[in-house]
Image 1 (cartoon, rainbow, N blue to C red):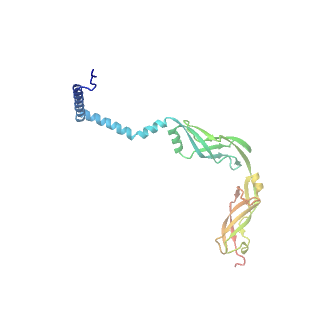
Image 2 (cartoon, one colour):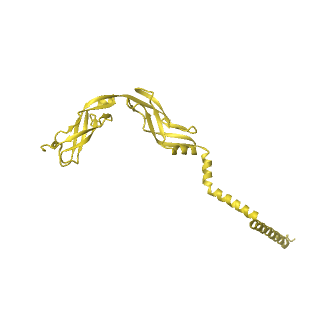
Image 3 (cartoon, rainbow, N blue to C red):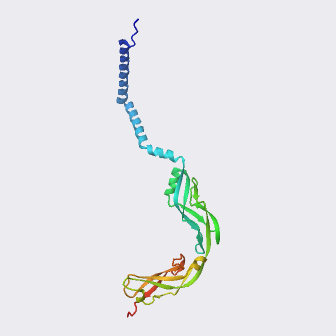
Length: 256
């Protein structure tokens, strides 16, 4: 017994071909109607404009969606401002910079950062002499942002400043063509200075000298010399000296 032929008959193939041709013809007429009619042209232009607009503003749309979410930002090397009466006290133990963690919407964080220098404050105005634990806070932080300072607190040492009078000596720096002994002892227009610092700083001072730079001088000269205080190791002591400069007159020996 012969098996039936599984191939489609010629009639079925012809019917399928006629159906596809009919659908293609209808589709062409629909496209022609849309393209060449006024309403169709407006519709196509509108759709094209929407597609172009979405493409051009894709990044801005993404940024807005991102900015609406809460994010965390780490800001390093934020300057610390220590508030205290510098005319009466000296403060140590407060770092010069810290790290700040800010949380909020990305747009708000970016706006805060763009408004200027971010500053952390250590407010010691209500404290006197001694050691104190003080909070570090972000200055002018907007209410829509949260911030954590690392470290959040520090131990500050507040020392009362004292003033003492010191006798002023001189140090002459000469050029390579001369020796210091070629010159007479420099004449200074003041013989004493007033120095203000902490008690420990004052106690560490061993010499106070007016440093006279004569490295570019060949004969007699006058100049303003900077005054520095030094400890036993010859290191400068960071104190307030009044006056900070002095007029010096220098003469070569045996000069007329």
